[in-house]
Each structure stands twice: as C-alpha cells, then as structure tokens.
Amino acid sequence: MSRSRSGSLAGAPRPRPGSSAGSLYGGAGGSEPRVSASRLQALLPGLRANLDALWAGSQQEALQGLNERLAGYLRRVRGLEAANRALEEEIAQVRARRGDPGQRDWEACERPLVELRKQDLNMDNAKLLLQIDNARLAADDFKVKLEAEQATCDSVQKDTQGLRKIMEDTNFLRTKQEAELEGLKEELAHLRKSHKEEAGALRALIANSDVTVEVDNPKKQELSETIAQIRKQYEKVAEQNREDFDMLSQEANVNTQALEEAKSELSELRRQLQGLEIERQTLQKMENSLENTEARYNDQLANLTHVIAKLQEELAACRADLERQARDYEALLDVKVKLENEISQYSQLIEGLQLPRAVQGKVPPVSKSHTHTHTYHTHTQPCFVFAERSC
Image 1: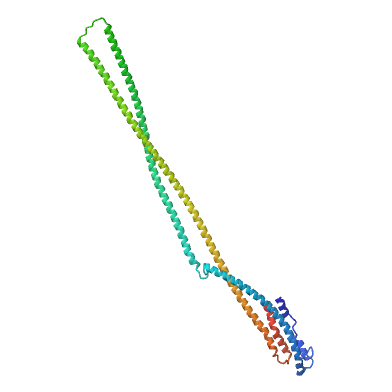
Image 2: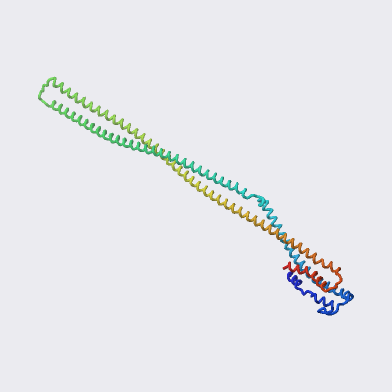
C-alpha cells in the first residue's frame, strides 16, 4: 500500500512548466506580449491558492503513507526488541549457568578434563591389572600346592598299594602256615594213634603169649630208652609246632595291626584328598568370579567411555548453540541499528517535508517562468526521494 501510494506520488502528472509559463505570458508558445506587473500581482493570490491545495493533498497522502510505514516499522522494531530481550534473558541464563562463552577458555577447561579422564582410566586399568596379577599369583600358588598335595597323595596311594600287597602276602603266608600247622597236627594225631595201636598190640601179644621170653635186662632197657627217645622227639616236634603256631599267630596279629594302621592312614589320605578337592573347587570358583569381575569392569569401562563421548557431544552441541545464539544476537543488533538508522532517516524526511510549509509564506514575486519550475521541483523532490527509498 505504501509502495502504491509512493508510486502514485512519484508518477503523478506534474504541472508542466510550459503551461505555467503560458498562463503568465498569455499563450502556449509565449508569442503573446508580456503582461504587466500589476496583472501578475493580481494573479498571484489565485496561483498561491492552487499551489496550496495541490501541496496540501499530496503532502497529506505522503504523510499518511509515511505514518503507516513508520507504524509498521515501529511494530516490527518492538517485536524485534521483545525477541531480543527474550534472547538476551536466555543468553544471560545460559551464561549464569555455564559462564560467559566469550570469556571462558574452553581448551583450558578441556585439557584438565582430558588429563583427569586419562588418569581415571589409567587408575582403573592399573587396579584391574593388579587384581588380575594378584589372582594369577594366587592361582599359581594354589596350583603349586595342588601339585605338591597331588604328588603326596600319589605317593601315599603307592605306599598303600605296597602295604596292600604286603598284607596279601602276609595273609597268603598265614594261610599256608595254618595249612601246614593243620597237617602237622593231623600227622601228630596219626602218630599218636599208631603209637597207641602198636603199644596196645604189643601189650595184647605179650599178655596172650604163653611163651616165656626171657629178655636180658640190657635189651629191656634199650626198648625203654627207644620209647623215651621217640616220646621226646614227638614232644619236641609238638613243642616246635606249638612255637611256630604262636609265632604265626603273633605275626598275624602284627599284620592285622599294620592293616588297621594302613586303613586309618588311607582314610586320612582320603580326607586330605577330599579337602584338596574342595580347595580346588574353591579356587575354580574364585577364578570364575575373577573372570566375571573382569567382564563387569570391562562393561563399566565401555559404559563410561560411551558416557564420556556423549558428554563431549553435548558439550559440542552447547558450544554450537551458544555460537548460534551469539550470531543471532549480533544479527539482531545489526537489524536494530539499521532500523534506528532508517527511523532517523524517516525523521529527517518528515522534517524535510515540513520545511516547504514554512517556506510558503516567503515566496518572492515571480518574474520569470523558470521560477515556478524551480519552486515545483523544490516541493516534489522529497516525495520523489521517499518513493525511491520505499522501493
């Protein structure tokens, strides 16, 4: 609307200088003789009235368009100032929370953070490596102990097997000696039985015999001595068998005690083996726990790395946001300065439009045609400039 009005003002049919000159000289071409000064003085009030009417109408339209444009620009300025104040408050809040981005040295803030992150990661890695080394050393110690106990257990098992073999040999020997003892007992019983039978037969033969046998005393003594010697021999054999039986019984008792001791030692070794097995299972559980702990710490380290990367991205986004807000702020300041300059220019234009009104009361007497042309250009020049600026 302002453009059309300005265009109408700029493109309005201007009063041609020729017509004004013709009205003064009395003809279109100026061929009529020049009128007198009194005639010009008489025509001057009417000419002034026409010029005032024409100037008042064009000035009113120009001022109305200018006022509308100025009101639009003022509304825009107020809206931009409100947006500017909102942005300034937001920037002030952001600066209050995080400090002034223009005055802060982000690189100086980032360097200690990077160093602290590296130190934290190095400390965590060192702790994990120390725990792993301690666990490995403990596992190695337990492995050495397990190998030593396993060797001891193998040695005890070998000794137990040797004792079992000795016990089996002893049992076999005892069984053999018991069989020999039974054979000797049977032989002794058989000898006693045969001796009794022979002695009974001899007694019966002597009792039933009618023959008188005179035996010399030496022969009778020899028979008694022979019987006594046989008796002594049998008694010696019986005593020897009895001693052998007692010895075998003692050996059997000793072997039984050794067997009991071997059994008790075997039970003790079994208990030790069970304890070692429990200890091995405990070590296996500790190793599994260490592996789980290592995996958990690795997961935590990965999560911390992800969080650090996310925080770095947020920091970069905050920096970009602050830079964008700073650029918007600078752009708004530039727009504000430009609007203020335009307002000052429009104020100067308004003052320039008000200047011809003050000049109208001091118009000199017109003696030549070019004076009207000059006065016309003086009155219409501001409107032409306004139209150019509105475009």
